Length: 187
Image (cartoon, rainbow, N blue to C red; front, side):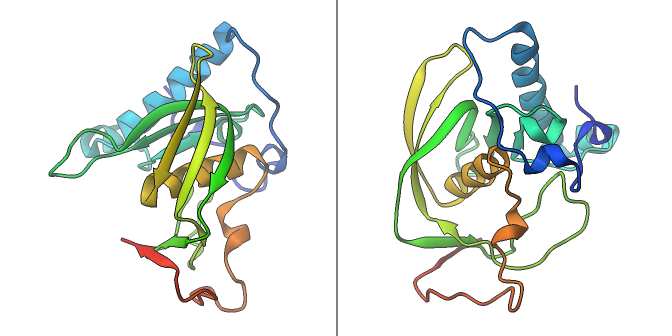
């Protein structure tokens, strides 16, 4: 299982590289990578186990964040009290955003990242709705439409695979300025 000491930190060159496409069938190393990334998310979202292992809770973890420059990310967006089933749970491999809405969206609290140890406040404006094409761990191709929080999480992880960090999208002069008044703020 990955621990916080295994998470690649901001400043490491691997976080700024465009990751390599993953070949199928998955190697044993890539199967373990997929399993271990999802396991980190599952364990980190349970307060007791997160505290036990000293983990920061996460909803996404991309391969470059554990030092592997490959197009693979684990995403686990938890459900709500009313609907406890995860909103989206998948290891996405070779993901591509094939379409997106013109409607911008941002998290009202801003974004965070397991690879960035300090708080960088500000709105990270993304697309409110996206369609992503990706392969699962068996190589099967999926095309899924996501909106709101799950869409933002996937965009954040896909950015990692392309060498971008969330704070690249924050307006440095005025972090809480929204240039488009139609931007949806998601709590």
